[in-house]
Image (cartoon, rainbow, N blue to C red):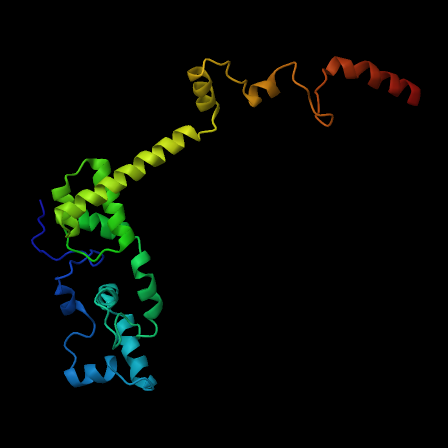
Length: 227
């Protein structure tokens, strides 16, 4: 039997906010501080150092962690995750609209990770569906208990309204029949059943198959005339 004795986690694992252990695995780790400042905190027109820094970042195993660190902490200078401040602008504007279920699962499992508003809403919805207490949701999201109660109440009302709307707006034959039954009415026949019934009107272009013995005399008579 083999045992795993290391505590090293996969590189794709979501790190907690206070977890900086990924620093030691960066491709830039151990570079002389002066060289690091020149490469990763270069001037706006220093394209040579910028390209050299991007080459270092291209092979970095924790490039994603580095970029997330800069975005979540709103760092406005330097090269992080292989991207300059200008290149990170698009990511910063979309950060609050991010919906990464890997982060959602990590937060549910107890990790202290940076969550967008959509990810926090997804956890609230999950908490309502699983019957969490307000205390547990407050601990996971880092909010007060009163706030947790309020967001859970709002989400529960939204779910109830959504389910009510889906039931009353269901156009399926089963739902229509159930509504008619509740009103003591005769349920309307299904259009599919009407089309398949023998009395249903058919389109003039529909092809109606004819038995083989009906074709035979006509074909034989045409052959005689041709002969």
